[in-house]
Amino acid sequence: MQCWFPRWLLILISFGLLLIACGQATLQPTTGLTSTPDGAGANETDLFAGVPQGQTTQGYHTLGADSAAVKLVMYSDFL
Image (cartoon, rainbow, N blue to C red; front, side, top):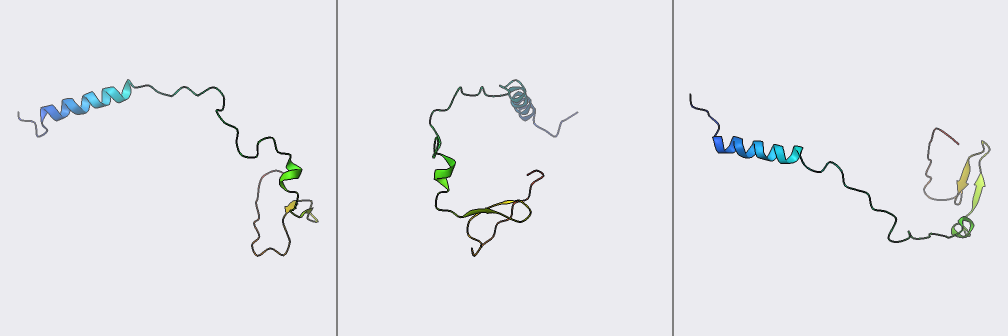
């Protein structure tokens, strides 16, 4: 009985699947950071020194002017 799929292609696909199955599952994480992120060590009050801050009547914190052209509202499950 003649197979419609070439034998060499079946062998090649089987070998590829074997390589994938036997490959390294995960990479080992590196230990520690090589550099510090921008603003690392800066005090939070220094970061927002010139930006208006406040609270709404419901107790939510605000950052920025109330008269800003764009208002971003962020929702979360906790306060």
